[in-house]
Image 1 (spheres, rainbow, N blue to C red):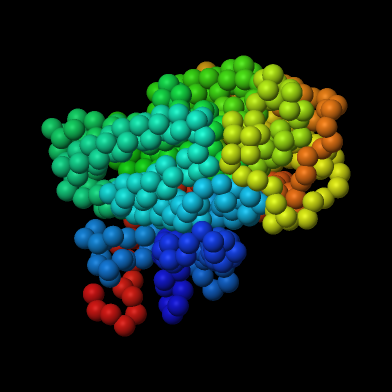
Image 2 (image 1 turned 90 degrees about the vertical axis):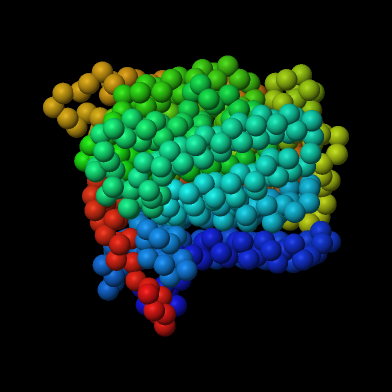
Length: 538
């Protein structure tokens, strides 16, 4: 990189941190200013992510190689390094799109139901972006703690008994996970003497045989920490309840947080613990495949058992995580490209579903809600304890039921994987990749079966909920719906539609990403050859 763009990699981390610090200087009465600053930041993050993706994809005059940034101008492995390649740039763009739409939805009223919402939201984005960009395992821990600390405040945003109970489980499990993370990091450092991912990739094949057991134990402990965050069964009991208790925009951005664990498992599997590493330490393998199956089955049963949309969405997150983990365990370049397409499609669809749930349930008859047909997202929402409607939420729009019904049907088709939308393309690509081999093992047949069954269960549960909430006449007139609430839902659904319409070039990008993951030497060389900043000396 040359000129101003040599600092572009650090912008997704430093920009939200700086703006969140500035927001702390203003009290809650400066609501309009805070909204403008935070929304401008998320919009800028979208632009920055697009520029980074354009660079690593090889725009005109650009070689498309991974871009490394030396913090403090110290060469790796002695200094901290940030790395943007095809995979991390893709995850940055996904995070920024989901974050900007969730924040836009929060402007309707949710950012006023508790203090420091915008500060916490931006810090969460900074932590997630840092986790995707870091090239060092210890700094991965640091960014994990940043995003977790922000998520603790966001899960409690708006108070309420149900949120408090769910947050206690969430905070406890994540504190335990952080302890496991540190133990795994310490064991790996004790064996290899480094935590830089590129340096680890070159040292692991040369670890003495007497230290292999300790290395594998550290990797396994580290893997458990990531898999807990991914929601793997049986360590996923906290996820449906926590996500159901969160405010809609918070639950929507939480949809990307399980993908942080998926990203790290995929990154370290391809970079550190591939077949070339000479270890059995694993982030992948048969045990990951069967754990993914168990997570998918648990999520599928949860989808069928629950009668509330927030719990349906939470269990679908588990189905999505299980699908991705099982696909990573099976491995293969074609399957990796398919799972990346599925990751993007499912994350956007779940985010849209979390945003549309609250206005859909708001339109249900209150007597039905109390009776348990459609429990509210918030226990205190119908008592007015959290927020009150006002004219700042935007212009009310007509045809509420038609708009909500159309969006709900679109979400249902996406999540169930019905043609011709991106959910179907993603699942078809996974199944096609599983069939594209001379002998189809039982694990591939099992994954295909569970994918089909989970889609059927989602269709049944969503159809049942739609009949209860939208197509059963209520006694009251439809609730008020504002443009600010509809626009972000429409943007996420439009992004899913764009995935369908642009499936060809987008899938070629996924294939190029999968190919790059299969060639870790390119990543390693980019880190080793990272340029020093202009105007300084090494």
